[in-house]
Length: 294
Image 1 (cartoon, rainbow, N blue to C red):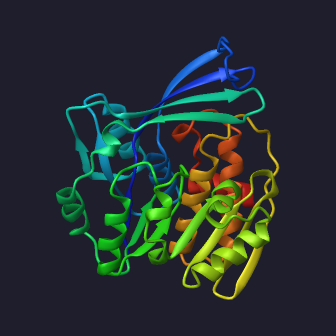
Image 2 (cartoon, rainbow, N blue to C red):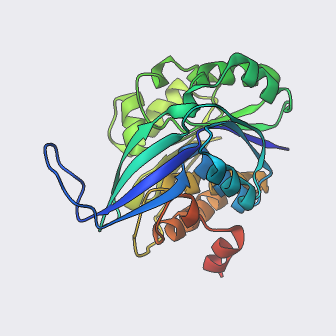
């Protein structure tokens, strides 16, 4: 069983700040770090470090050598990554001293996925393989529809949340992984349990994982409703927390773990990630997460 992550690849510029800049304010950053990122890349790295056989599909620009190197060094297969004559996607990230962040995205090469590329990539996958998607590339709806016709299992992290999400064929999703803000935007509800109930009513075929930051995570699916507390840690940078959770949750299921085991493993992995600086560099390995369990 293979995992295809058709997603973004970004070069992140991370600014350490005393606080997130307010409207109209000019403020000097304490430090600047350039690092690989993008929700797609981060989730592929997390999947691979958690032991999954993952292939990444997407686009980079001529400046994207670091992105390829990062994927390969984590064990991600990169034969479906194209290099285009344009700028790679990138993000400007402010991280305040308490660890919270604010992110500006520029799509760049991530917005140049073609129909021909989709067909070429999906030809390498079959029924039962997993497809992981976010909302940082174009043609996500087309990818979902073609993957569903092949019988692939579709995982969606609807981030960043914008008007495009409402136009996606969400009824094709087998597993939603989303935070409380994304859940509220989709359902119009704010209470976590009501968000889960609404999603279950609209998409009864799907499993739902709702992450709640310091309040842990909730799961609903297959007749089960589960709650997972957050693992206490010293928070340094929350940038890749959700992506780490996603990768380790999926990988635990692929290993034959139960949803409860997947929630616990993902929570431990996220706790390690937020205790470190950066996005992809902060994501732990499976062995590191196992050490937390011992």
